[in-house]
Length: 197
Length: 197
DNA sequence: GAACTAAACATACGATCGGTCGTATGCTTT
DNA sequence: AAAGCATACGACCGATCGTATGTTTAGTTC
Image (tube, rainbow over all chains, first blue to last red; front, side, top):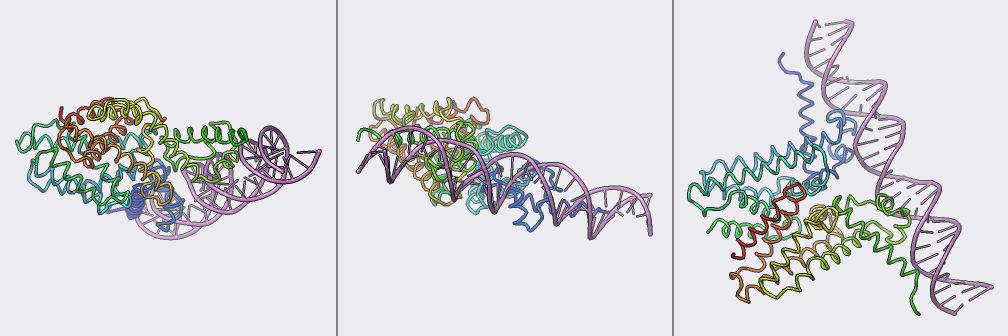
């Protein structure tokens, strides 16, 4: 009853596969993701991946889950270290910029690549991606709301402001991918203009 | 020397194919576009399409060109009918909203679907899409600039404002695709907030 | 040690991918 | 009438796609 090392090995390689799937999907999209390429890059057999995920759809769902976990650890949680209010909101945006700029995933923002891919494709993957996107917008709106009630920024509509912030961040990610080095600065100028210098 | 009806027929079906390719690409992306599906939908032979475009890449380039032509006719030109200045800028945005909402293409905005698909994929298709995107931003910036010099809106930075407007429009297109009916209203509120009621 | 289980593999399948080749048909030029 | 060109087609190519099936290996449980 200590620990089944077979299952442990399974979840370990499962995570390794999901992590690489996120990198590929951030470039090619979740539809462009393929078992064959994944197997080649990880030096596994295609059928080996198949035993761990059964279907491509399960693999896509696992990739979405892994992406969110990494995003939370790299962007959301570090911002929570900063004092609540406008400072935390600004820290959140700064961490997002480095998330897209570094980048954490090979193709930049995971959702900027996968949402356009799946927004017209019905099924559970679309539903999960939509849920993650909504959660991100709600998180943003919550941080805006806190900054407003603290009286540190203007009395903005949290939902509308979250929509605007997400829009600018997503556009910046695309601009970075297209080679625009000044994208981060445009985001910063927009944020100060939006929240009030 | 009147008119070569062979070439005429060629360009005619060529345009028919390109138009359908735009619709497919607006949903699946230019990578997800396939000759087989195109042939089935148009009731043509796969090799018939290939004789007209030779390679898939040429087809993708033709689709990009066709998309821009339709976009210009549906969004850019109608806005030019309106008086120069802030009114023309607002008309441009309204025409863009109906372009995404109607929608003109089966999957909504063509570039919202194809830019994330090709932003990390080197080659002439990426270059063309990038050029079209830059031209759109420049067009937006020009209309902002005209409104500013006319003294009808605040003294905004045209390039930065164009970036912000494009960001919000693109985000609205995604939101519409995900079922958010209030996306258009968010755009309008953002525009009034941005340009000054 | 025997029975069982999970991970990983090899093999094979039907479908589809983009692309090539040869050919038939109709229009244009000579 | 003859020669040439453009469209359009069917047949086929090698490659890759996702999936299904059976087998081997290693770890667990009895």
